[in-house]
Image (cartoon, rainbow, N blue to C red; front, side, top):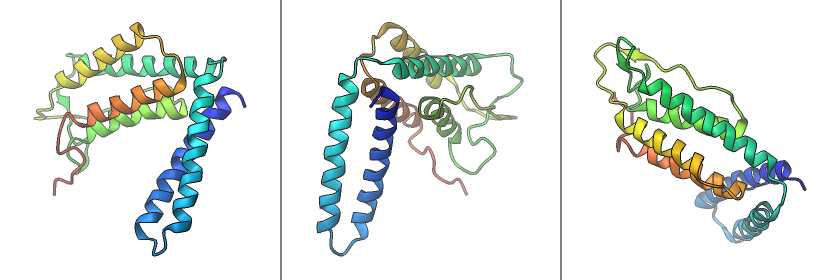
Amino acid sequence: MNEADLIKRFADLNSQILVMKSRMKYAEDKTSLQHELFLLEKDLEYTVSSLKAIPEKSTTLKKLEKVNSILTELYNKFSRTDYPYNFSRNQGLVIHAFILIKIVEDIVYVFDHERVSASEYYLEIGSEFDCGEINRILKESIEFLNNHNFIDYIELYDFIRTLQKQIVSIDKDCGRMTI
């Protein structure tokens, strides 16, 4: 298998494991599901070791380039001071701090699906959303990407998942309904 196939396999196995864990919560007899989960996790371990060992890493390098590009685009967008209003925390919805979820989605879509640009974010009269913390995280992430030698896809994957958690944790109420 080449790197791109292994990455697809990795994503598929992660998805199957999540579904299996969800099914186990409600199953009366968990024995067969536990065995299936064990096999999936073993397959995931093998796929991870294969991804780490594969010498050709062109897909990882492309993903790294695209992630760096989206982080830079987001940083530039949220650093601008020439907008007449602040960015809307809720992005026109009733979900608290949905802007943080949208930022994470943009990053993940570029990483997982190779989307090419960031979303348009809504501005709002009277919004008090402060971009300072998101800008700090984005800037530090860009610097890290530029100064770190990623050795494999799994290391980049772990970086993206940590970045997701870091962004969403800016607001402890992120994602709750505001009605």
